[in-house]
Length: 132
Image (cartoon, rainbow, N blue to C red; front, side, top):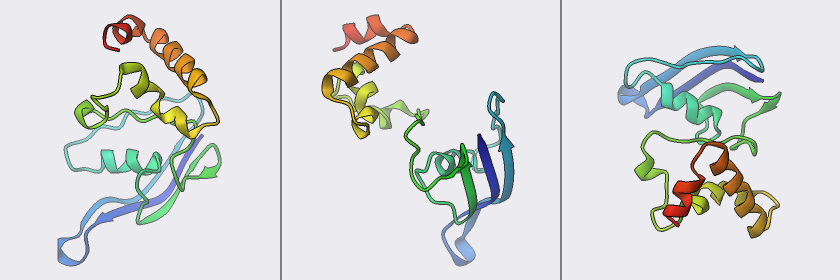
């Protein structure tokens, strides 16, 4: 499901370059659970952003379900820890949840239904109605 080969990512150049990831090889099969832990600055977020297609690594290959990641895969959702930079405060809870579905061939009614179903599945339907 996830294959990473010789992944590297460097921020900056020359003497100020920071090597966040250096020659990482990793394979995660379907159904396996992977936890990424480490101190601040060790490359955890860089790895996750690379897998999600949010940044292009300096080198190596990432494959999700056999396809090379060149952009955010359509079946992938990313939730960042700092919600203040991830959510749009002028949008409702349901509209924030439905936002990524705009990339799919879904009309507004379908997106709303899918967002409501997702909120219900995690026990947040009542909260979404409280903060429309």
